[in-house]
Image 1 (cartoon, rainbow, N blue to C red):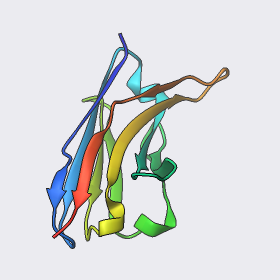
Image 2 (image 1 turned 120 degrees about the horizontal axis):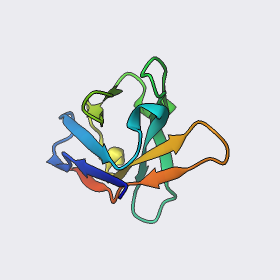
Image 3 (image 1 turned 180 degrees about the horizontal axis):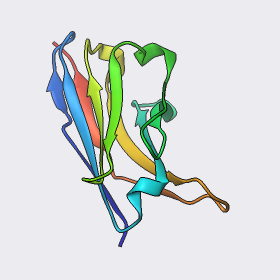
Image 4 (image 1 turned 45 degrees about the vertical axis):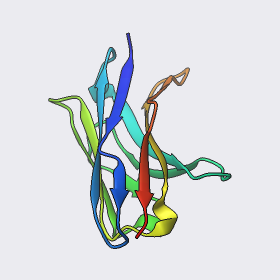
Length: 119
């Protein structure tokens, strides 16, 4: 069955770094775009970053540009989010999503991993 399993979350001090990973199985990973979303307490879920199926194109929300880098390895069916210069406002549950390129659009979600930025 389809699985997206995130890892790498945890507690980090402001200014620190974390690297999130998302391992995919059960679908043709290389044909899907991938995204990272986050949801902070009492806030709506927001898109953090996306990457194309080939990895050639990435997009980031303004608040993380220059600090976060998303990448993928189609040979290993994984996607990563390197997060540097973390701020308290980055605290949230981070989830990865796979999305198909065709129609109808198909989406798969992981369960999420907690990132807490605090001193």
